[in-house]
Length: 464
Image (cartoon, rainbow, N blue to C red):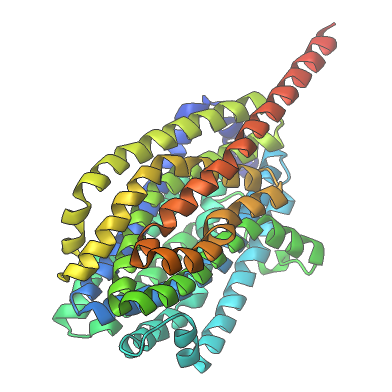
């Protein structure tokens, strides 16, 4: 009986409380957890960069491996989360529990396979990811520990998404946030004090991920969530598995293409400027990702609101949520874009003391500053269509920045513009992604207007 009362309270909160404050309330903990994640990734880059540009380049190489692990974890997490949110909106707790259990144990199993395969073929994988000869020893050392942590990392992504999509993002913030803060303190301890070098950075990351996993799992074991975790709920139904994977496909494409594009970027940048290009673009990626984490946090606060209300067929609330998040997200990105443009050359020396690396990275950051406010449209559309189960639209939009536009540009721009082509790569792809996504956003709003009118007409007829 108590569990049912808790369900009703959560349902009422997600489908009846004022939309804008609700999104902000959910966005604050998700933004904090995303920011902490971005900060500890940046901390890794900062402390490893003190060991030299070859070590810094190695982190950039392994980052594409971590992106691949994250891609699969987020595919299961976002796919199951979208289904869970819509199921809870329709008050179908059985489907929600089966979906959560199936995705969680699938993540652990696939993570173990990645660990085994990755350790067996470690050096060929590092070469494939674009490592230079000088960066290879560092890359192998760093990747070895990351691979050992793959199962818990993937499990954490599923748990993190569970809490977000159920509208209980505080649990997500506590788990991800405390793990991230711990990583920031462990980095200097293991790298400098214990003199473990690149190994220390990797060990710190894995320990932090383990702590996050425990913190995220504990309230599940204490049954604080609506979707229950029991091995007996694990489904052998291929339809459910395919539904999870196809719903999460945009995340797989987005993160997977991010990993592939980083490989191509490393290869092209390495040809033009060696470790300097790898180091500069690695730092660029971490800085931009730190800002991007804020936008993702806002979007992740918006998604469960959209999912619940879609399941409950409350279209006016969906429209309000979409417009508010679009405007608010764009304003926040503009807030970060202005100082990024003016202080790019002051920011780069914080990471490394190398004039060539600083110049490449700072020029890229200043160009990207112009595009930051436009990023909201593509992110919003992608998250929206994934939340309501329109998988093909979401998948197409997720491919734009890192795939459809990035892959041809990464080969063409350096050929004609040299290193400046590398620096302009992300800004150009961001603009093209914005131009392609905007019509999808407008079309979605028009469809919502039609559904709102139809719903009002139906209500008027019922009153008569």
